[in-house]
Image (cartoon, rainbow, N blue to C red; front, side, top):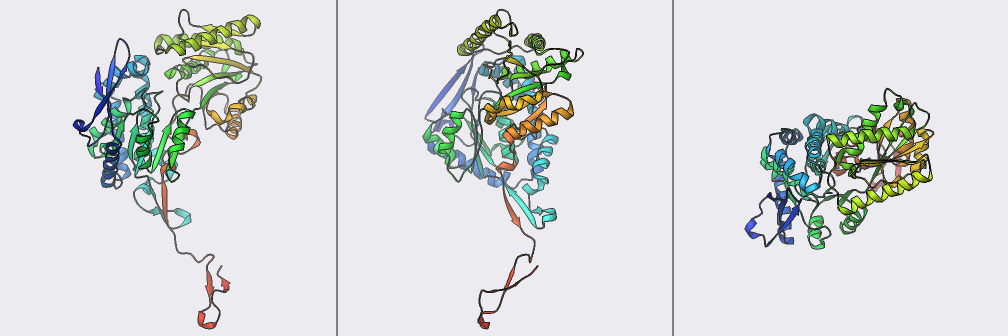
Length: 495
């Protein structure tokens, strides 16, 4: 399968001096063609999408933008739509995820961008979405305010989970910003398909988007990509984020989403005999979806002692649930270094199990499909991913925040199975530590539409505000006329 992986309104293919072909997969081979752009060409494209934004997106009612996004999403949710069928055929070869994973995961994620969810998001962040259209009353503060998004936002996407660029693009469009997307070399197709699907339902909106791919760190191109944008939104590793931060000007709004760690906490109540299977299935789902490649995926589970099922027994139940998940949605292909990391972890776990009768290893037979390591030491330890999970015991869930303190700057999501009263107490301690999301176990890879990604707003962080203040005499001084011989001396202050 050979496809063009770019969406660049106004680009004349004949004016492209060179093309680059990215090849993916072995048996089901996919080749993607992307243009090698000159800096001047990229600048012209950015100027075009920014001008299209000025003519349409900047003045379009927010309800119209939401409606266009919803219509595009509805096509992605149709199993017979061209975009979805193409993604389901190509993305397994490009990403390495199994076909069932892409088929189940992609529409489930995109469904969070339906009309009703976008309105909930805007109402939660702005109170009144009308601030994006016109000056609106400020309530008890008096006066009026209006919100303005950047004229153009440059996005640097990560390639670990297909579909994620939709969140960044949709948030920017809701802020009425034109978008230049730099697709990841590991997965450059989905953002192009998504931009094309928006153009199918709203051609003028599609003209406000540009998506292509170039090697990360190309200073000449990125000087243009970052220099002409009013906002840069970047996803990636710590090294990639540091490189981008060094090259984005101080006057440009920079929003970054870097490397994060997530985990689960399972209370003794969820380990009752009649709840064990469901608890294990939920934990397995969180670890299996997208093979732990997302920042929302758990590296380990802290399990309380004192329940009907011990933490060690829970590890065995989790292994059974992961085996069932493998049958339903197989894990994707591995790179050689990933397979080596799993084998090395298993070897270390086997040695530990021989040295300590409390430790245990559960692993898929004849493959590296899934691995569960039970370790009595509760110290936080990251997983090598690809459905490789650690289970660690704690006497009480309240111990977990202190165990996480060494990695507090990286914390993102906790999947928790606790009663409400204990859940809120733990959430408060985790929030103080720096965690930004607590969700029910079995929901870790599926954030709500309005979640505060890395503890921030989605649309609000991109906006600036203009206020029209109401008349007020508070704090105003009166001065005598200069003819009286006194100029600039305060006489009295009005209350």
